Image (cartoon, one colour):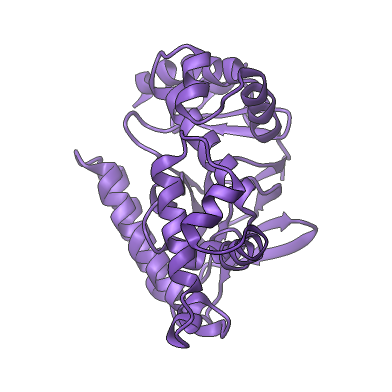
Length: 310
């Protein structure tokens, strides 16, 4: 089996089904126009070196096996299983002889912004490997196959249709996840603990007000707790710190603006909630591996060529 690097900007035109533009180990996923989901089908052996991207990656084998290494742990994904790799997670991927699979990449932000999603935020930030032992594995696979069929049919509302399937899938997986975690937010809520409701209010507030100045003190007051108690509570229920959650939200907004508008970088910085352009540039590069200007250039170079093949 020939090992290959992920597609570079120099050879991206070789592929009609999509482009995987690399800057070091950071992959930039290009989507169809007005879409934040991408599906690749493959039936030949491939091996991809360690990389990461801001999209969720779903490995959906049709036949045979796929192999990946995530954080030093080796996984085998069989043709009765499915795997979800969370955003910004370094991983390798290889597909053996006789295998066929879909690789699905999508932006989780559209779901993460929904009220109540933070209940399963820890699940969404971890590797999800559904095996036959999972009560929802078969149904999740069925929904994914239906979704990919819709994707290839290219209906007019392709993005809405695909995310409707993804929402159903995360509800299924989230329900199973919550049933297996006795310290989950819903359990605390049934015990008349109002903490979960407070965190939900905070997440909704951040999703709507990310561009405003938000401090730990001000957001703790929204929750109705001291900032020290709030910090521990937020991390417990969402799997990430408040500052990281806010930062990721702002960078996600900035990424969207860079790809879909011609706003100057300074306006992108301001509209996504950064008060300092230098802070925005530094933070963006830390997360994406390139500057905002470079990020926009990557998508400006890839999108027109991609659409010619669509």
